[in-house]
Amino acid sequence: MVETKILIVYASRTGNTEKLAEAIAEGARSAGGVSVELKRARDTKPSDAGADAFAFGSHSAFEYMAGELKSLFEDFYPVRDKLAGKPVLLFTTGQGGAKLSSGINRQGRGRIQSCLD
Ligand SMILES: Cc1cc2nc3c(=O)[nH]c(=O)nc-3n(C[C@H](O)[C@H](O)[C@H](O)COP(=O)(O)O)c2cc1C
Image (tube, rainbow, N blue to C red; front, side, top):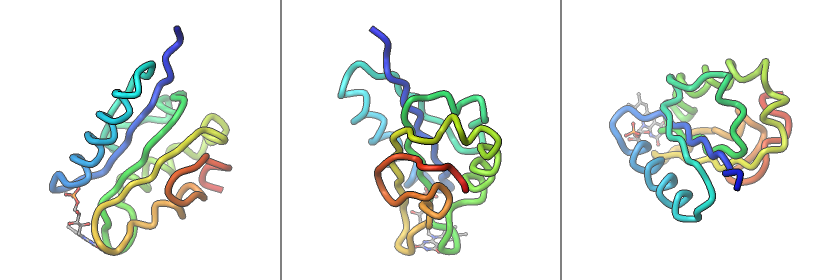
């Protein structure tokens, strides 16, 4: 059986978002039939865009996503066709919201439309 590859990417300074990412990974693994990879945004590369589904998370930083996640979305720009149409979950910690959706044209949970247009 071909496993669905799920990539969970996060930016975290003091561990809160990392814990959330780990909980999401645990939940995804419990579904079975999937392989789940957990990566820090700064360790994620355009070559990771081949996964079948994604989750992106960041702590709020001055009411925006962390710089390393924005930097990754910039790196993903040349491979945006590999991301378009794939399922995506967004998550954030902090009270101000991290404005992740402005980076991928979607709010919360859905499909990446045209990544980073
Ligand atoms: C430099 C900096 C900027 C922050 N800016 C915001 C903000 O704009 N809004 C907010 O709700 N929280 C803000 N926070 C709080 C963090 O987003 C919050 O504590 C978060 O849970 C930290 O996640 P982490 O443990 O994964 O780093 C900021 C924290 C830092 C260090």
